[in-house]
Image 1 (tube, rainbow, N blue to C red):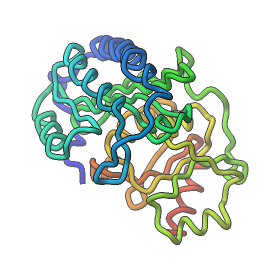
Image 2 (cartoon, rainbow, N blue to C red; image 1 turned 180 degrees about the vertical axis):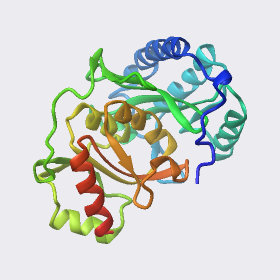
Image 3 (cartoon, one colour; image 1 turned 90 degrees about the horizontal axis):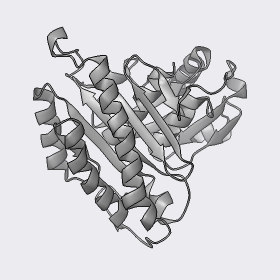
Image 4 (tube, one colour; image 1 turned 45 degrees about the vertical axis):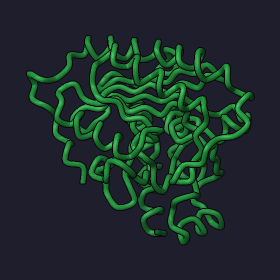
Length: 285
């Protein structure tokens, strides 16, 4: 269980004005790293290195993470956790950030690296600032579509200045479009979804952080993933929360009660769809 759920003392909290300054600076920084380090390498990276967990890492991931690691210190001088860092360094950054009133940055330089390497235009830069175990600001940017999703705690979620969600979604799960990643969900559940899903249609685009954002935007109605790393959900979960969505895990109604490093997710934008989807998933797991 995550033991960092409690809010810090009132005197130690960052003001909303300071949080807005940090968010604005992060938005600008994310756009800059995409222009300088990522897009010049798109369609020019032919392969990536396979990491211990089986995922891919490209030279663009490494260059973007190095760029962000240094520049985020100018926004808020606190520890940085990046997807491409060694696990020991990630854990040390989390431990230091949990002790430090300034919090911790969590970055995924390119979420959807396989898409990026193969020339598929669905990947994103994702940054979250976490304090006391909860994400307080989030930015996710798809440089191909020029879509900047962002949120700060208690101030709503936005896409390029438009409040999310963009449309009213269905309240009937039978009409819902679901984002489902089959890789890590239990086989019995995966088989049932493949053969007899409770929803209308299924999509998967290969970028977890964009799945969260598309759900928050109302492009998807519900979502399921069997186990995401911290950098996969840190930004997107706040964006969905601030858009009015709900989430839980396979075992916990409190999403934040799961292990911080890897969490499954059951989520939806409409409350009725969320309840129906959560119950169906748990009954079939």
